[in-house]
Image (cartoon, rainbow, N blue to C red; front, side, top):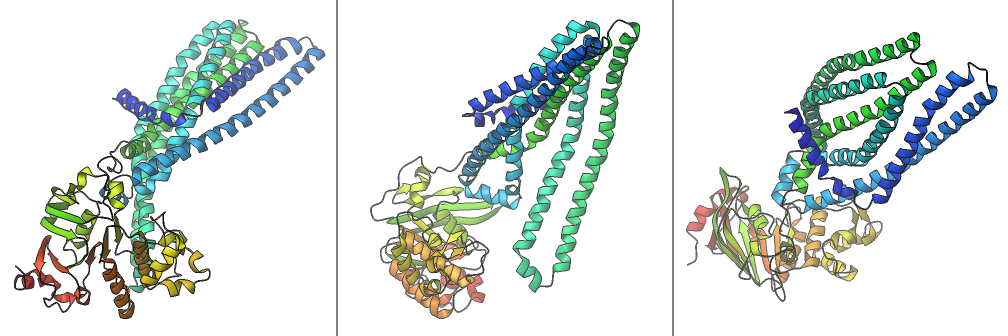
Length: 585
């Protein structure tokens, strides 16, 4: 079982070695540096042997000074080699980490929207940075450690066999025992290490969640409650850490006995050989040096295997994303309708986030260019989910969506999404200037287009009052703009992009009546030559709409007269029943 786990860890790790491509020169250099370092280390014990056996007994001062200068030279060489090795290892690690991060982020952002949301809710995204760091460190250190171990073993064992083959055989019998003790410790600690890592990431996610709702916490006077909740999570994390420390301490004591016993016997055998006159003092000291010289790389290799076993958790999580199928962004039919989309149809669409909780049930509808369609319904009835399916963020569980007569699943999502723009309920601001925010996703547009869109969204005058106008820098948590102003900034972004289909999810939720009326006038203007879907709770927004749809409990009614009476949100829970008496045939 342990060998199977070790094999699985190596197999997972081997899949990431492709990120070393392009670093062949650095790898060869690092291997060469390892050879030079090993050769310098091999000479040092021989120098010590000459000093003890030849220079000191015969009081040969010339030989003494030659040996001393040679030893100083070897020390300087080892120091320089260590600096070079550290520098190039760091450069290679940075390069591998950047490539791995870029690949991971690209695959993550190309994953289906539902999978990203699931990972975000499960705090998996908080693990990305640590996972990438662990794997990249293993990649860059694995080959150099392995090569250094091989060179040290061959050279040192060869010289030791020449000096005293009996001591060498005892030494070779000791190494597997020491390595086995370390690997045994690693396997025993792996479950607790995984539990600690997962719990620490949940703790970080809890802290981020607390500060994301800090306004709610302070206005509701819930500081004590949140502190208590976080302290309970922290205590649980401390308990896991203590259990890991306790088990690690006990296992390290057992491992220390397993390693030190044979080591002490080997050292005793070396000095026993000196006392019997079988081995000279210089040879014994050289063998002891070679012993430490060979054991150290072996222990480093064992530590690398330990990191590999512990890091297999990170490998598994990265592999889950890198190996998962992404969205059908570029393959498939190209959605190239001249002038934008003309017609989008949903036929018998059913969808559920969880198999036992349907959100949309047998939804059929048709959206045509040149009409403003308003969707109303109580909160949680499925309106936002309907919009998410229409823009291709989710795929229906059954039924189909057609864009200009072509099934959406057969289209290139990248080309389809160029035809669609969405204004979500959440106020989304990117890090960049106001101009960057308005032109986000519209590379072919310029400043003049952004100004016209801002004027249509009733945000132009406010932008001009900012410190640097359209060049003012914003960030997601910025307080420079209010929620309503950020909402209008999103609407301006949608106006710039245009597209064949525009979806507005509560675009006037944060606006005052005057601005809401003028924004609605602009939306109606854009609806003349586009497909426009407006999701709202406000009855006044259905005026002048071409169609009114009612969503309730996942069911959609499209045969409702826009003139049927709706007075307040409180009545929305009965919209479907009211609509039954106001349908148009």
